[in-house]
Image (cartoon, rainbow, N blue to C red; front, side, top):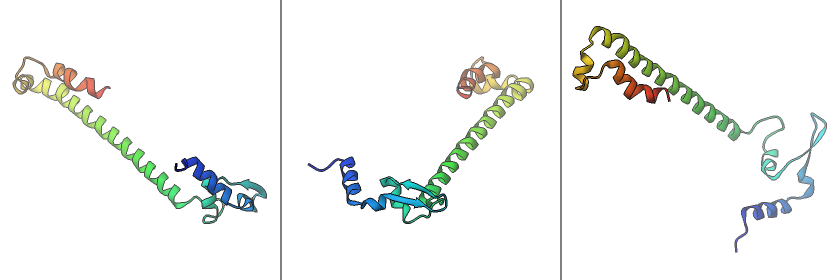
Length: 122
């Protein structure tokens, strides 16, 4: 039976010498006990410096959140433009256009409220 993942981690932890688990931070003058996930970065990255992989991950999440907000703003802009066009321009200046386009006796206001407003307002 193969060992469970936590069993492998415990075996790897037991294989590390005890003095490698204890690191002294000379800048602060304090003792730091590093766990197994941080120990791998301890020798490669000096204290106070974030690993490149962490910075790449933070940058990716920042880009994802900015893209999400931009999409939300642009979709609100489009929905509001459609509402203003249907209710403010077409229904006032060309009141029979909505009847002709939809093929029903529905006004632009009623069509917008039935098809778009319920989705746009959530």
